[in-house]
Image (tube, rainbow over all chains, first blue to last red; front, side):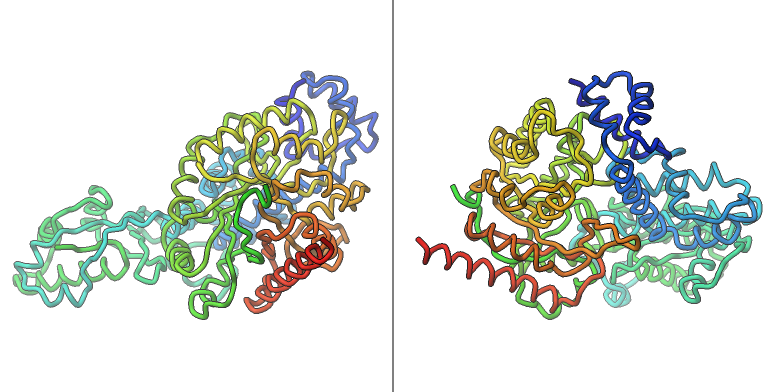
Amino acid sequence: MALPAVLTAMRQIILDLEELPASPEARLKLYRKRFPDLSPHELEDLSKIENNGFKTYTTSIFQGEKGVIFNHFPVTLNILQSHWENVRGTPFKPFELARQLHRRYPWKSYTTEALLQNFVSFVQTDLKNIEALAPGISEMARFEYLIFEIKRAPDDNLGDVLTVEQLNALTVEQALALKLFIRANVRFDEFRYDVLGARRSYLRQKSTITALSPLHCLLIGGRNGAHLVEWVVAEPHIYRFIKENPRSHPLNLEDLAACVVEHSVKSAQEETFVEFLSVVVELMRCGLIALKQ
Amino acid sequence: MRNFNLPALMGGAGLRHEHFDSIINEKPNFRWFEIISEDFMGYGGAVAEALHEIRQHYPIIAHGVCLSIGSTDPLDTEYLKKLRLFLDQIKSPWTSDHLCFTMVDHTNLNDLIPLPFTEEAVQNVVSRIKIVQEMLERPFLVENVTRYITVSDREMSESEFISRIVNEANCGLLLDVTNVYLNSCFHKYDALEFIRSLPLERVGQMHLAGWEPDSRGTVIDSHDAPVPSEVWNLFKSTIQLTGPTSVLIEWDKSLPSVERLLQETIMADTVITEMTQTVEKAA
């Protein structure tokens, strides 16, 4: 009895063996060689299974994975498709992409995150020839993965937080006494290409993208009040503040104020405070921070 | 024991994202919803908020696809802890997953792969279900899967395999009537006889679904069409054997309108009521 060996053999037949012999006898010969831990009965049982049977699972599995990837990386795949045939010499076949992904980065978890992370790695390591024609494609993959993370991140359950209107009603002293929380769903990264602009453009127009424009940007993303993903193109000192501080942990709003003041080019105190307030409001509106008393 | 001692919720529907707004805003007369646990557990944002809102007005039963109860990999206890937390949050009175494996060698097959009908597989599944039941602390049901292959029926039949498992693990059976029907077509046996051979007192829930053949005419358990008449007929005969239960309409792709989906659940209610009355009259 070798149940583990039977299940392993089934896994390999379904996921790894692309062509199975047509006859049971030929399959038996192949399986006997490939799966030495199987008993004669187990080998016979597996070799009796017609190829269409296993193929139904193979098709379903890779179609499913392809669907998940296409759903979460629309712009990355758009760029990939526009260059694939030129670079690879074969037409772009989404099913084969899923199969290649499995070969290079088998999905080793039940989580969707793991599959998506595998795809990001695949773009970074295995599509360098496409990246040469479409620089920034691996950044786009990274960016689209962050969107998934932001959408799905657990809620931080901060309870009642201040609205922008409530903030505007406070005095300067009252405002600076507030506690600031970087929201649990916030994600950030540094990019050398205009991933945000390209994705916005694609979602509006659905046109083919063959290249990304170079643009150095620091992006911080979060979920706004309507649970939609919003992005801030951040100044370096704001990016650093977000990056260097923990999420969902009480910070002092006056620390953010000090950070803004330090880098402000405004000369008048009042103007500096207005600048600070506009930064705070933008971060609140995009769901990146919450304020509490 | 009847209906695995669970409440018979009658007809319910699968909860899909596309229907969230209609359900929240219009509160149609569904009796209950089933959700896929892994689509929600551990996630926040719009999905979590919608689920929380819907749960205020409707019972929700969680159904999993990633437990891989038949695998020989170690049970994923972190997954089970997350699942337990989630089930408590949504107050799911019972939960279920499929009698199959979805991962082995720590590799996700992303599908419900059937098991060989062997003694070793029975013992493996039984021991794992017992752990699952301890960790989840609520009734647990395993669902019979559509199988496009027979891995091995050398030692026992599928009905004996299922019966042995649910009896020895003392768990429930989520009887997917569509899966029985499709398997009876694929593997040439009588669907109703198959159902009769199961420990029907352990059936605590049922699934019904429809399918559209793919572009090559291949029948796949696709959940993308209304329940066909052949399955309704089998369901009618089954209800005469089991009595009332909770029956889910699985319509996951090519989604109908909320109204159309509700109609299917009402049809299920009608069948249950009529068949139960038929049995009572005969008695």
